[in-house]
Amino acid sequence: MSSCTGTRGRRRYAPFRDALRQDAALAKEYEQFKACLARENPVDRDAYTNGKAKFVARVLAAAAISDPADEYPAG
Image (cartoon, rainbow, N blue to C red):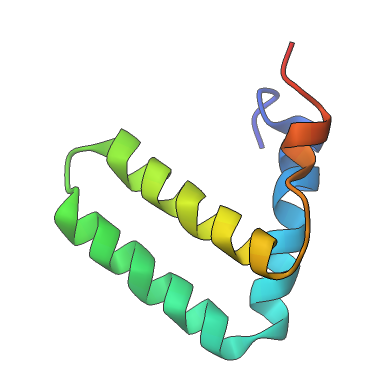
């Protein structure tokens, strides 16, 4: 993992990862969603990444988990 994400990156995505591990249907939905994003944005990495971020935010919100990145602003 790059030093740009480090502990903050792991802390941010651990709740999302855990949600996927606990819900096979959600994991499958995420897999299909990423494949669709890749087809729709084959060369636009920002659009792909932003799409994934929206999915992550939706999952965290549905689980009533705040995004740890909000608690630890960059800088």
